Length: 348
Image 1 (cartoon, helix red, strand yellow):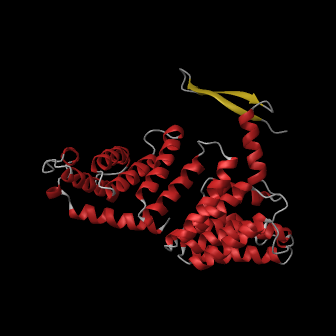
Image 2 (cartoon, rainbow, N blue to C red):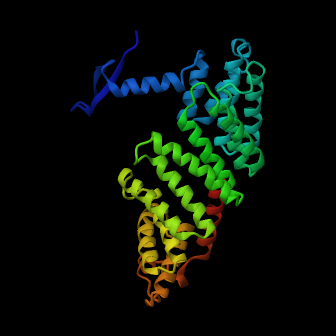
Image 3 (tube, one colour):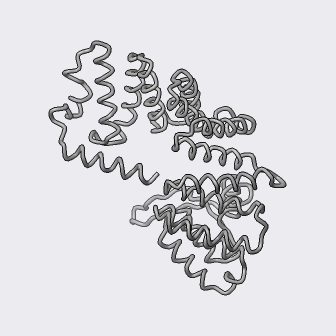
């Protein structure tokens, strides 16, 4: 019979022997109970190799996950059980997509969907997983027409399910909003984001991170519209949640300060623009190198704002501290940073 222990302490004796003190834990351990429930729902399957492949995905060991999935594709018990076979192809798709291999992932997700459709009606709730996964891959491949089509199929199923899951519906609305936003279809994007927000306001606590993300998404649409006052309204709502739920140095807070700064600058309020950009810079600077493109751009913005405020920008304190005055910036480092920036964006 198996047992689970908590590690109480680890120390070394005078003889150089490591002593590990364990405590037997059981059903009364709430954290263990939550972990067990999560594993039961999201990892444990009827096949031991299936369990291992899902666990490898959870811990980002993608080579092993793929290896176990390929073993499963040779197992007669898996080949004769459509739900298990579809799950294996879905896991392979997730593995490929995480590695940036979107075309390969699309083929694997399609295979999973085809297997399910041979045994299930087109509106079965199980199929939302495959449609959402396909939509995400198409979006990453800049095929937004196919992406929106798959998201709408998932949304139709979710809305008409016997027991609709509101969080899933909100997520699909948000994903559709993003697909529309990148195409410049801002009216449609705003409609999707607002539908997402209406659901989240009903089911989530007021400081939930998902609300912050939705407020931020809406602010970006208003910025694209040129309605900077509305953008500031939603950015401040974003910031309010973030500062009350995240560490003060979290990169997401830095991103919001950056967006606030740019919105204020469009309104020619350079004092607030500079104040918010300084806050963003103070968060980004310890995380990234002085030659990271985002950090360089922030310094450029701060110099511009100071210039607009009539300040002397010849001797920029932040630049001199970093040893990165304009005349001293190493071009090779800048170009390398620029290339990394574009690589990073292409993998989002």
